[in-house]
Image 1 (cartoon, rainbow, N blue to C red):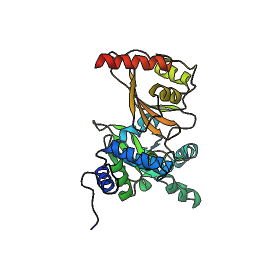
Image 2: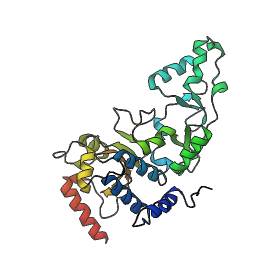
Image 3: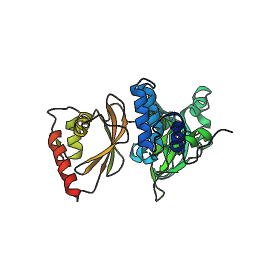
Image 4: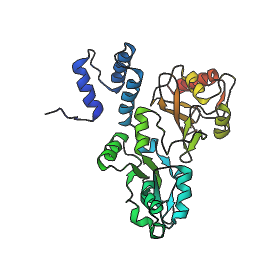
Length: 306
């Protein structure tokens, strides 16, 4: 009988690697270092390493980290006619759409764009009733781990879920493509940040930011005053401030903003998650100055905390 995971996939993988590799990694960080050493000596290519790191990361990431917020959901109303729905499908090009009742907090189903084709091709427009073709909605909590969600997507063959908050209100949606992107990188997906949209706001304090966002746009959005003399993008600022190429999952604070790397490879950062944090501590205040000055402010604040 095949050996089964006892405490999750990371524990199981550690156990397997300890049998094969000297040094016996004891935790996730040591395991990743072993894998990176393997990549450095060409036992594993960079793309494979990135995917393995992505798999490990899904065991720690939650749905709230990658979901499409409610305000950005493209929805279809339950009472909409076929003529009302067609322009939405054409404009956004998604394959699946949530169906709502009286408001975005009342998601009553999901409809596949392909389910509408017979009504156009076979001339059955007068017979259209969205209630007959929509599927029951699947609701999941914001706290669900991505590896668990991926397993559920695969077993149920349902590839879209509505995310609810602790009070039962609709917080957003997530698709299987959103989860897979954390493993394999960017997919030409349907629900990600649009090419011309660089900052997505989830709620009052949480944002997803493309690393290619210009310093000027970032400063305008977050009321900061980061110098753009050395860099044009927030990704360049992040790399210089840290002093190394950030790794996926790495976090750091600057003033009242917490940065977390959502997606990165060996060459550059791709996507960031930003959270406004409590600004009452010694590191509070606006972000101002060059990266060197900001790094010095961080080091000083860390010394005061210790």
